[in-house]
Length: 161
Image (cartoon, rainbow, N blue to C red; front, side):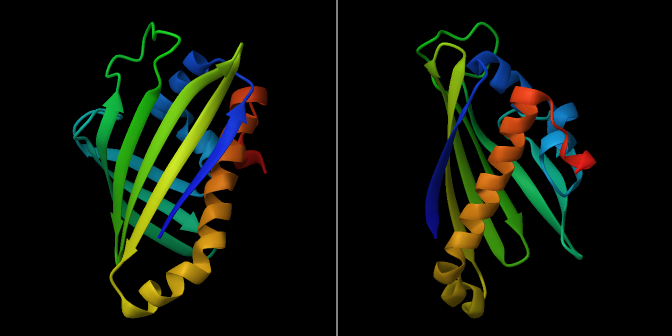
């Protein structure tokens, strides 16, 4: 299953990239985050493997995240016309996910965030149900993006909601 969602954020690309790259900010906008800890490597760097735990309703989901792409590797003093690519693979019981993020300056003081997501499932039931669940997965991705947008634009912290 694949889908792409995008959102414009009323903040300069450099600000958006800095907020996304700083692990201190993750709990402020990633709803349900219990923990996100590198087990091998440095947060956000290509090849880094992290253990991620999310609370989804009454259920806790643990996954392993591997950073597969970060371009440019140095996020300081980015040329205005250079898109930022940040990609990761997430593996959990019965599921594999690739998330490919692209951040571009879309105007003065605004950033376009495009997120391409691909999911694969091990179980027959989930493979059959996945196309029917696409709207739910897409809605969750848009919610995470909207939470980040509110955090980047207004400092809104999801832990207070």
